[in-house]
Amino acid sequence: MLDRLERSAWAIPLPTRQLFIVLAWLTAGVLAAGTLAGAAVTTRNAATVDRARDQGLGIARSATTFRTELANADAVAAGTLIDGGLESPESRARYDRNLLQASRALTNAGLVAADDDRGDIAALADGLVRYAGLVESARANSRLGYPLGAAYLSQARHLANDDLVPRAERLRRVGEQRVARAANTVGGPATTVALALLVFGVLLTLGAGAVLAGRTRRVLQPALAVAVLAAVMVTALVAGSVDRQSNELRRAATDDVGRLIAANDASSSLANLRVAEISAVAAHGSGAALYEQFDKDAAALADRLGAASPPIVADDRLVAYSRAVADVRAHDERGDNVGAAASTLSGRSNTAYAKVRGDADRQVDAASGTLARRIDRAAHDRLPPLIPLALGLAAALAAALGVLARGRRYR
Image 1 (tube, rainbow, N blue to C red):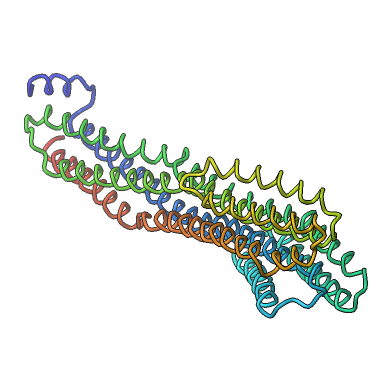
Image 2 (cartoon, one colour):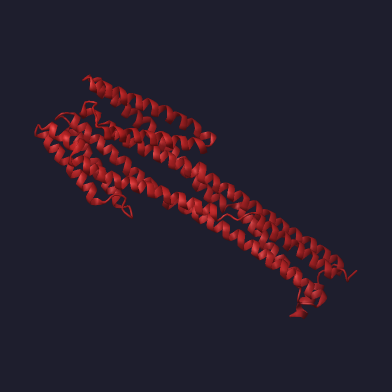
């Protein structure tokens, strides 16, 4: 084998000393370039994950929370239609808490928002104030017995459904897209180039060792062995960090985001079902179309939830709520609107709704927490750039000095 290496090495048409100088500079240069590229990639990836966590996850979670809390507030506010504006302290506290959580979600979004997001966040904040004002006007008019209360509440619902919810959904999608783009960026072309340079540097160093062995007939080259080991470590560290971060971000952008969307959709859909129920009762015997819409929407929600694994809402609880509303409808159609209202506001229907909505809200929190932990793991997997930089430059220096030390004996 040594004879073969010797023949190959002497086939290169350069004097030994000149050849060794060229090998030293070429090997050190490629290793240094790969090292700098690897360090740049790890630095960029750390910044990419930070942006995904703040401007991606932060925006998506805040928009989701805003939509969920607004839908819950709307469900509570709809009770104004049948309680004459004189809601219970618990109901009022729940409504205020929902609005406060929606407002806090917008505050959190504003702290991490990109410039492109600020217009939507400002519009949502303004819309939330207008929504709360319309609900208060509805309450005040309902307490006084004026029919304008229903009109004000209808305006509030249209504002929420036609402007605020679509805007929050758009903002959520923007955040999700940023997480997906981050996954592609972490494992993108720049990473491929950096790893290719590092691998080429390792192969070039091994090749330089073979040439030295052929020209000097000494197989063992300690300095080059150290250089190869350090370069392999840099390559493995950078590749491992990129692989872990990319996998975490891809799972966040697919499975975890999908789960959060499904849980949020369930919570909002349940709130809309509650509004439909209350509106039907408020129609005082003329809400047959609203009851039919409730049944249709409840069946559609059950179909969507049936594909979720693990379940977002327990099947028996959604069925129990649907049956409770059927009982409300039966009271209403018999002319017992007072009994229907009592079941809706504080009886069986109210209890069943609280249970099923509690399931959905817990799943929203759980999905949001899982997504946050996934991004945090991606951030934890970052590689401090000083590590590949130090190892890579040490490899380049060892390779250059090792080759030049052999070349000193030759002219």
